[in-house]
Amino acid sequence: MKFSATPVSAALAGLFAGVVMPLLWPHLGDDSLTWVAAFLLVIALPAHACVVGFGRLPATAAGKPDAALVTRVGVWLLSAMLAAVLVRVLPI
Image 1 (cartoon, rainbow, N blue to C red):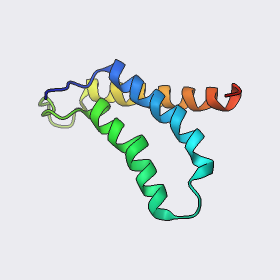
Image 2 (tube, one colour; image 1 turned 90 degrees about the vertical axis):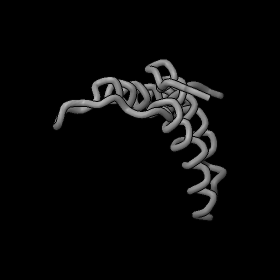
Image 3 (tube, one colour; image 1 turned 120 degrees about the vertical axis):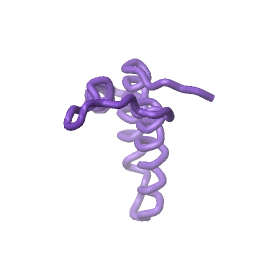
């Protein structure tokens, strides 16, 4: 299965994390294993799949960041923050 990460997939991963994590947060309790599992399943796995992708990153010049990856990370963070704020503001 070949999946290419795009800004749209990064935004969807951010929306998922931004909506699910604030709703899940109060129910996690004090068990650290539950926290680790929640962060892996809700944040790390979707971020890796939809922001970084599973293919090889294109080669960049020495010292230059990958502009597409930086854009996807920015979109992911922005959409996650906006979704988390909307979950807090809007009654769900």
